[in-house]
Amino acid sequence: MIPRTLFTSDHDEFRKNIRRFIDEECVPHHARWEEQQYVDRSLWNRAGELGFLCLTIPEEYGGMGGDRLYSTVLMEEQTYAGATGPGFAVHSDIVANYMLNFGTEDQKRHWLPKMAAGEAVGAIAMTEPGTGSDLQSIKTRAQLDGDDYVINGSKIFITNGYLSDVVIVAAKTGESGSGAKDISLILVENGTPGFTKAAPLKKVGMKAQDTCELFFQNVRVPRSNVLGGADGEGRGFIMLMKELAWERLIIAILSMAGAQAALNWTIDYTRSRKVFGKPVVDYQNSRFKLAEMKADIAVAQVFVDRCLELVLQGKLTPEAAAAAKLFTSDLVCRVVDECVQLHGGYGYMLEYPIARAFIDNRASRIYGGTNEIMKELIARTL
Image (cartoon, rainbow, N blue to C red):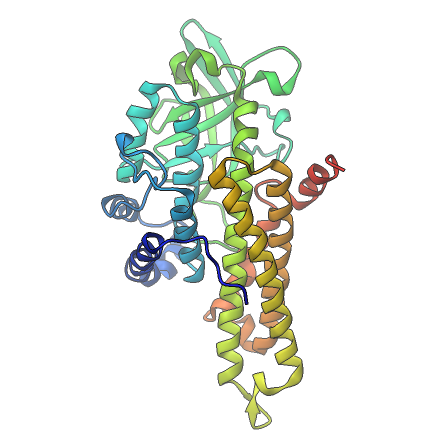
C-alpha cells in the first residue's frame, strides 16, 4: 500500500519513546484502571516529567513546541496498544490549545506550565444532560455579580472531569437571545466552593477513561477567569467553532489507528487459529474480508493524512474535518465488527483486545458531534 510520508526521523524517534512509555507505564496497569474507572493521578505526573504532555505548546509556556504530528504519534501509539484510559489528547490538544489560542497572557502563564508538567489536569465542559451537539442550547449560566461571575448548572460526559484541576466551562453570560453571542468560556479551578464532581460514569466501553458529571452551584469566580479576559466575553461559541475542526480530526486519527490495530490483531489471530485442520486465514472468505479491510483502511488513511497536511498549513476546513470524522468513525466500527466475526467466539471475550475494541470504538460515532450532525454540516456546503 502507499507508504505514509508525513513523519520525519524526529517523529519516528519520538514514536519509539512514546511506545516504550505506553508499554511500561500504561499497559500493565490498564486492567486495574478499568476497574477503578480512571487512571492513576501519578501517570499524569510521569507523562509531564517525560515531556509527553502539551506537545504543541511553545517552550516558553513549558511545552515541547512541536507540530501536531507529534500529537498524532502519541494518539496512534495509545490506540495501537489499546490504552484508551489516559485522556492526554483532551488535556494537551484541546484544553491547552484553547488556553494558548484564546487565553490572556496571565492565563497562559498560570496554567500551561502546570499542564505541561502534569501538575494540573485539564478538561473542557460543553455537553449537558439535556444538550449534546446543539451547543447554543446550553443551560449552564454565569451571572455577573460585581467583579465576579456566579455559575449554576451541570455538565455531563466530561473527559478528565474526575481528576481535573482546571475546567473550561461553556456557560451563558449574555441575554441577547442569540445563543451564539451569549456563550463565554470560563476557567473553573478544582476546589472552588460550589464546584463538585460525581463519581466516574459507568460506560459501556473506554472504562479506564475518566469521564464524569460536573455540578456548579453558585460557583463564584473572578470575571478575569473568562477565557480571553474581557475580550472573551460572549465569544465562547466562536472559540468553540474555531477549534472543532481539529477536535474532529483527532477522532479521525484515533479511528484510523483503531481500525489498523483491529486488522493487525485479526491477521495474527487468523494465522494462528485453525479450523478443520488449516488456519482461518487460508479460507478465501477470510482472506477476502481481510483484503477489503486493508484496502478501506489504506484509502481512508490517505485522506486523513491529507487533512493533517492541511492542519500543518492552517488550512483544514470544517467540512473536511466533518467528512474525516464521519467516514473514519463509521469505518472503524465496521472493521472492528468484521474482525470480531473472524475471531469467532473468542472475539466476544474481553481478554482479547478485539473485544475491548468492539465496545471502545462505538463512541466515536457519537462524541465530537454525532455522525448525523456531521452529515448536516457537510450538506450545508452542497
